[in-house]
View 1 (cartoon, rainbow, N blue to C red):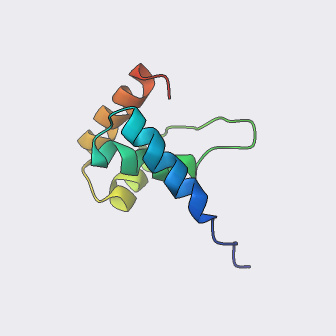
View 2: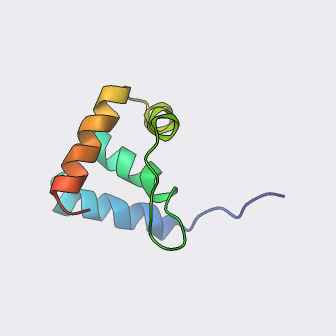
Length: 77
């Protein structure tokens, strides 16, 4: 079964939020990939395998993912 493609406005919304929060391009990319992992109740389970997957999908290092998550948390995202 093929999943439907996400609407383009989601990426635009995240890019705008990233700009308003003054996020680096890497952190904004991680936030975009992270948004795909949110459960129906708004929870994200941040396991090591998920962080490694975020690094691959965002084309950055594991350390960058960890730092970006700290930035997102400190900004209340």
